[in-house]
Length: 370
Length: 101
Image (cartoon, rainbow over all chains, first blue to last red; front, side):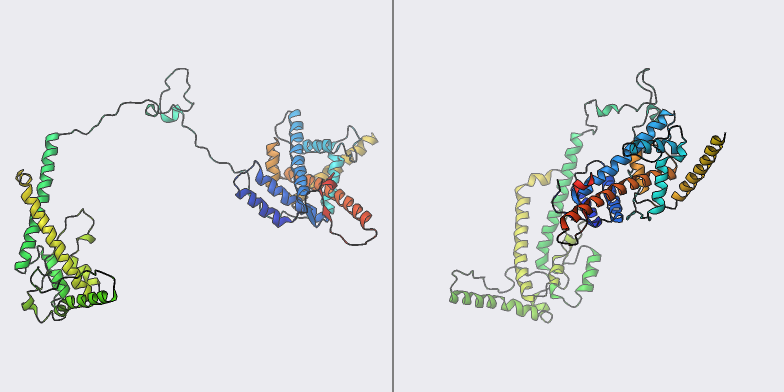
């Protein structure tokens, strides 16, 4: 009936038990058994063994646990027999004698003698004197750990009166009625349809006003060098773009500068692509020249030094998006791309302005609602 | 009368021996830890605040297991001696399941 050839030592037992614990399926008393296994292994080592088979170790651990439980049970039985709840030395001695009765111990046949001189105890004394002390290998914490349970407060605790005379106050209180009774819910907010409409109209007016201002600003931009709406922005831009910074200059209006049309690549042939590349460079050459010669030709190109700050109405807190567009362009070091982007941005702005104009003309009744 | 006196003396000797032993138990650390013994004794209804009695139980259990292991060792040795009498090889002393009984 021997188990396979698995020999394990104390260290591997611990790792095995740890593995078993990590599986998550904890059986009752897993920790106690693990500690007992280590103790049994130590005892066997002191006796003279060099290795165990797994099944043998399990069997010995079972023996140890059963012996402990039997001893405790017998001792408590004898104590109860004598009318006590706490066990003493004589209870343990009687229990030991009972367990050893089958094997026999010295002075077993003596009846009516004092238990102090019992053979079992004498043998234990002899054992302690002869055997060397082997303390347990690891420190063992106090177990099982007692968790403090959170109890439901009693009627007294909650200062509540129990709903019936037959219910004493020290019992746990009933749950609150809202947890088990369904009550209808009413919308507490008073709705005023008139005020709601007024509020809606007000918000729409605000939006229209902002759009109109934007449109006006866009119109004014091309004709003259408009200053910023806020003084702080003007100061900031003075500091930043004091020396005619080309990045802070206003975008050019259509028709102000000669720029050749962008030729889209028709077929992916070598000649055509080459041709396209050349034409693209040609197209941007004047723009690049203009950028390079920007500071000297300030008057000629009508580039205002100060750039109007465009305020976008976004929700509060998102200040990053409110930055003027040119500042973001400043971070890009490439001048070529800057020129290209400015042209694109110009077209985009033009489109947006047209859209706003169309909207204001198409829905005049919304404007008049005030 | 003499009989009684003798027994009385014997009792006193035993008493003193036992009390000395219990005192010495506090110095001796049994292999089975106290916490483990307390856990299993509490499970079976044994209630005792005295640490010396816990130690006594631990020592008694250790003695029991050591006896079982010793008997198994004797069995193992006897078995090996019977097998190896021709080869005269030293084998490792390994406890197996059947040797425990």
